[in-house]
Length: 163
Length: 271
View 1 (cartoon, rainbow over the protein chains, first blue to last red):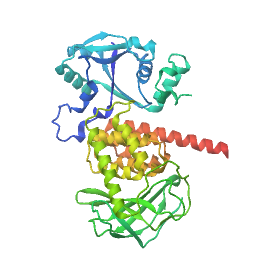
View 2: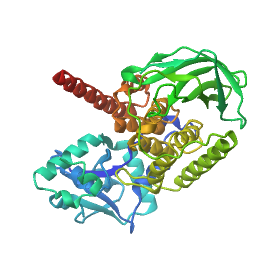
View 3: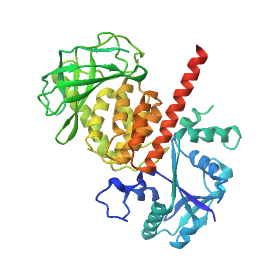
View 4: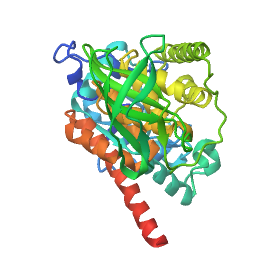
């Protein structure tokens, strides 16, 4: 079963041990900032179960940024979304890595209740990963070198960091 | 780099109290790794409760011989660790290991009243920026109004901006996400004159109560690529109790160690 990737900021999801006011099992509000919907939809990417397309998806995400940066993401088993009643729609992404756009998905018909359920699921069951900035830059460089991404599509601040 | 501290140093402090007052400092000093300067001070700070512990010269670029250094002190008191600053008029830099900067910066007015007004202006500007930031949402890889203003404040006010930000971050006068974002951008900003002060703030923030702030500090240090931070990051990794953050800090440590190795190899080749 494939996985779903959502770009996040990891510190919002890290262990809540330094929030003594938070009742055990409760979700702090900050992670919801990573689940802002537009038109009641949430953008995610579908990762193959063997993660063979993971790096391409990370490159696709990096092509839409304004400067090179580390990248945090959460990976969630797609099955878990069905269990909480979240529907998935296949909608091409709009990154500058055109080959990767096919793996873009939208989570649709997202109510506030579902967003919270999703947040709890991510908090409890996702794998959260950080890719350092230098690795992101290296991936972008490879994509540009192989002709998969046009360097002049990238933000000038990123383009000037490439060889 | 050698920094000599006159043991009968009379310095003016500025911080919680508005007026300048004499402070006697007895100091020993040592050179920090890789030419950074970092001085341990035991001071008779009767005006405050507690004993001064650290003295950090700030203002990279002002390293000409006999230049007065602007220094930072931290000292414990009842509510935690407080910070103030002094202008060490007898702190002498013997040798320069860094190039002076040519970047334009607002100079501190000489007159103490003007200094105070200048300081108040900086504090107000910085506080307004941090206050507005609490309404912003930050996303990796994207600039924000806050990030642009952080860069602008550092370029305009230099050390004074960092000092005002230090007080906000260290005293917890903003939320953790804003503090973390500020530290990340203080690591990214390209401003040689404030390098040492920013480095010190980031290293100090590795021990912050908030995991989010510690994360921002380690990411800021990764952006600075200054390998003199390695011992501080290593210690932070060892002490970090949050397992996810510990792993992220390890990445930063590995990155800095890789830079250190690459620099050593390059030096060997050149030799």
